[in-house]
Length: 236
Image (cartoon, rainbow, N blue to C red; front, side, top):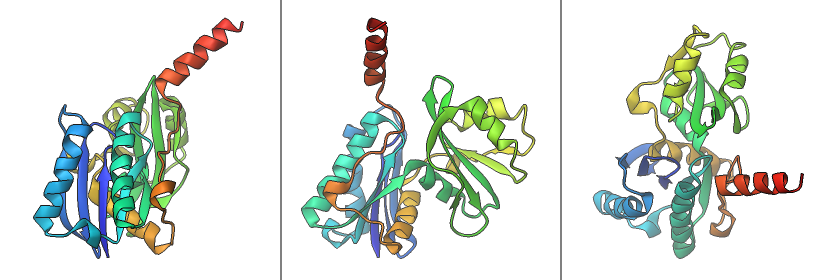
C-alpha cells in the first residue's frame, strides 16, 4: 500500500511517501518561507524522485490539527485537491499523534507539546511499549502548570516532543526527575510519521473522502477570540 502524507501544521513542512511500511522518500524543510511557497514544489519533487504517479497512491494523509490555523489550511487544501482529482481516500491524522510515531523504539510516555502561546500548549500523551503508540488522553489545549501537575502521577520515563518541547523542558526539568527532551532529529512532526499513523487508520477503516477532510482546531482563531472578548466588554 502506498501512502502519501503531508505536514504543514507548524513552522516546518514535509512530505513523504511510505509503501508497505517503508519510507520511499521524504522531504523536510524548516525555513522562514511560507508553506504556500514550499509545499507544492516539494510534492512535485517527491513524486519525481520516487517515480510514482499521484494516481497510484492508495491513501493521502495529512496532519489536520492542532497547529497553525493558516498552515493547517494549506496542507489540508492540497490533500483535498489531490484526493478529489484522483478519487482516492484520505486520512486525517492528529498532529500530536504523528509525533508519537517518531519514538516508537522507546519505552516511555511521549508527551507531545506544541506551543499555543499565552503559557498554553496543545498536548496529548501516548504510552510507547510496543510498535504502536497507545493514546492516554485526547488532544487538548491546557496551561503548562496544569500539564506538570498531571505528569507528576506518571512513574515512567516521559519524553517531550514538538515545538513546545524546549519551553516545557525548561519549566518541567526543575520539578520532574523523569522528564527528558527528545533528540533534535525526532523532535518535530514529519510526514513519514504522519503516513505511519495513517496506515493504522486505513487498516481500521477510519478513512475519509475529500469533502469530509477538515481541520481540527482546539481553539478559535486569535481574531475570533479578540472579537468575542471585545463584544463581551461592550455588553457589560
